[in-house]
Image (cartoon, rainbow, N blue to C red):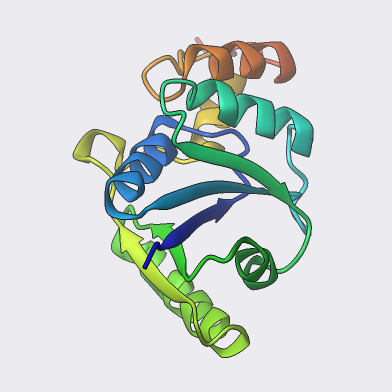
Length: 167
């Protein structure tokens, strides 16, 4: 039996932590999709098409991982893709409460789906898309946290706040 797993998220933008999680998933499952959400009630910095392009660029060395976009409930997209596993990354205990609730709700809506939690490598524990955006906004270097194509897109998109030091 071939198992399809979906790693859903907004990926605004995709980080090295996301890449690490989806790589780990690809070692465990027969077919893995990184599914980029339209954003729902979030206001992403990048459009869905831009986030898809950035994800494909970040995953260019992993042709076995498919990148798709979606604008529906995660479980409906998973059902359409024939997926029975949802991948979720956990960086810290603080992520667990929300992810546990989502896993339960997703199972209620699609009883055949299981949620598998993966933790990133230690060097990626602190990375989140919002923190990477903030680093760039404040003029910091995000090279360590994102693919070079993603870094360039961030630098071009996000207005850097001029530093203000008080004497």
